[in-house]
Length: 368
Ligand SMILES: [Mn+2]
Image 1 (cartoon, helix red, strand yellow):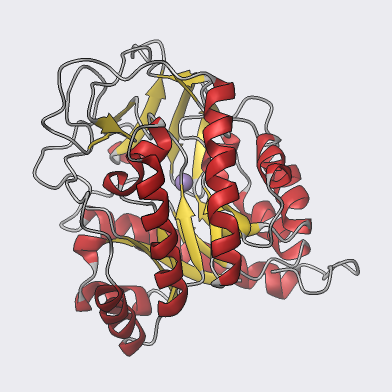
Image 2 (spheres, rainbow, N blue to C red):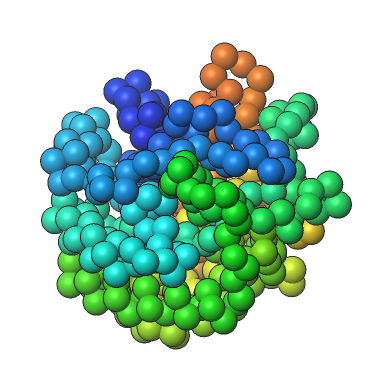
């Protein structure tokens, strides 16, 4: 298994590459979307029109030269670029919303996947979600007053619709006419998703890119009047069976899976790990499930993270683990301190499991 770190575009600096290397990281996951650009983030629910900010990249797809320059920069620090995380809402809003630009956006997404393959980035992480990540509150709710996220449906009206021009909790069209995004049923959402998979997976296969799907965060049935896709661990199987492909994989978020009612994280690792379908792992712990849970430090919470690492090892998983949404610690570098804490923990867990846990006889060959 490999230790990774997720970096936002604004964090792609020499200092942060050094920070990663110093923490024992070998692989990076990069977010290219400029969250919060040009807007203050909406960290609580409510009728805020901006969500995570405005993205106006409709006619600005990612470019080969940019990605190649980032790759060279990453590699010059002795690191490997494992995955891109998330499409820009500007690039695929009408694929999610079944809008008029759907076909044109699909063609561009295909060119983007071809380009990602040419650059040599093995995984494209994505989240096929209309409402996106929304409904939580950030505050000093963590251990010792660490800033962490709480999701509590008794405190938030999750039926508040999205304004026109928004998808995935970002604004792609600030000039959209007044109005709201129409409700979307589960059947409609799965139809749109099936079409997307049928279109993209052959291109991904051909270009050596794996498409890794993040589950719903939060894993409610419906959010802002739109259905959720993978809000139960077994729906990952539905997705894999819908359009079978070697390029179809999971951005396996331990935290989101633990938040699902009735989910068993270790069973899910076993089930999807045995199929070789775990693309990379979001390593995060949580206390509680929908409708009320709290994000916590990796060493507390409902998931026995050592057991999770052992379960990953037992299915022969050899991919990347990255910390996810780590609580922020009180100091001059709250994000870095939280990440360093989680990275140290994950590294220790991997070393302990490799040193002390017996290797099962049944590790399937060729599974990563
Ligand atoms: Mn996650």
